[in-house]
Image 1 (cartoon, one colour):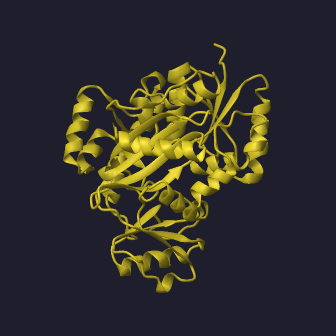
Image 2 (spheres, helix red, strand yellow):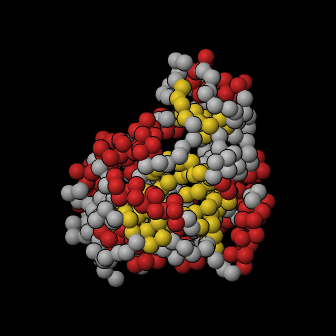
Image 3 (cartoon, helix red, strand yellow):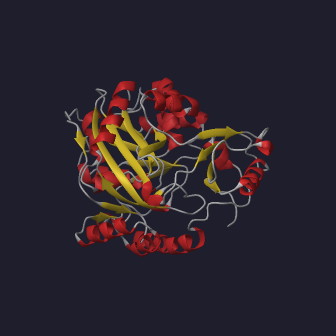
Length: 406
């Protein structure tokens, strides 16, 4: 079958697989997936084609590599999409050069800087009345005498994720929680003894387990109007050092007031494309505290498609097929997860949500985005199953350990 257009996805993780699956479900087409290495999520799959591109995330490699790919498909309409932050930033930085070859549904660099630079981000929050956690920064120069301006526990995370990704030290995690002065000092000392010398972000810890988190994925059309919003309530996050902060199980939920507020914000700043918001419900004042905005669909965004709102169909219908779309606030209940049910029910602590999850499973309203029956063969099944069993080991070892100690 002749494909009307070709999606090109940058990254080969579970987000890439979820996006490929969504395109396959919507149009029966196989995206081209480009990555620096081929991760398990996209291996042994017949719904996508994979191509390895060494150092694709480096500025000097990025545009030439993509130009070369584009020239292999001279008569195809190409849709370029990022599966992770580093690729989203590279696409936005190089948007004028890429637009010669691809449809690029992303904002431009000036707007990116407004949203991503922490100090600008908080100014925007003030302006649009989004609450956010108490936040400050600490540097290699002043960390020894540093005292946080709010109560413990506190969260510590790197301001420069690219440099942090490259550094090594014992007990390294994506995000740390320090419960007291001694723990804070030990964590900062360990970080600054490594090659990482950039700023660290220090945030107050909003009380509550993983189920107090919310994730919102939105798609804004080329006309600058929001077309789709879908709110998810995570039940459990990943707890391994490299996975902290990534969602492992989500139930879709609905909050019209919150969606209206985010929609007004996106339309007012002139946003286009996918946006992904992470926030946490704070019982102390009944407000959602906004952590960050990602300029792409979230890593777990297949939860939107699973609930019956195919996220990739929104971008392709709008950008490639010029189909008019109305505003939709997702309202179906669905359970999405990438962990085994046994792990979910053992480690999730919100009893009410566990009951809801069991009920959705009984009704068949649940999805693991990696296990897709249309795309299953023995090799893929074995790899995914081993990967799945590994979650039992990981949670046993790492659950709720967010300090330096392993």
